[in-house]
Image (cartoon, rainbow, N blue to C red; front, side, top):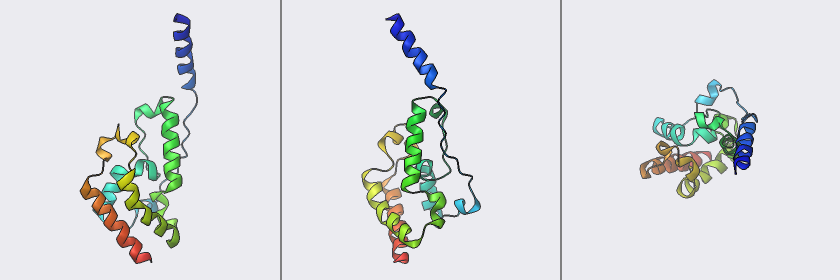
Length: 144
């Protein structure tokens, strides 16, 4: 039993040397100019930006493997699906596609339950969902 515990401890210590290396992009002025009402921007920053922007706040525990691997994967996947920091670089067709997905995503799966376990402040209220849905629908309508 002692050997197994020692082995587990050595593995845990060893994996700490595997870096997280989430690609950090330098925010630019355009990154901070998502065209949305201030209330929508506030909701997005509180509930979406950690995974869907280049403005991720990594808490202390995200530096401890294997949590760091999980965090890295979710941030990379979130940015890959949609990145609000590069929103202004998307063409209208891509923006429209994302805007049409937002209402369904916030009703069914976003923010992810695993994220909400630690980040309770990111939970969307019904008013938040309504504001995001209205913004997404109105912006999509303007693009059509």
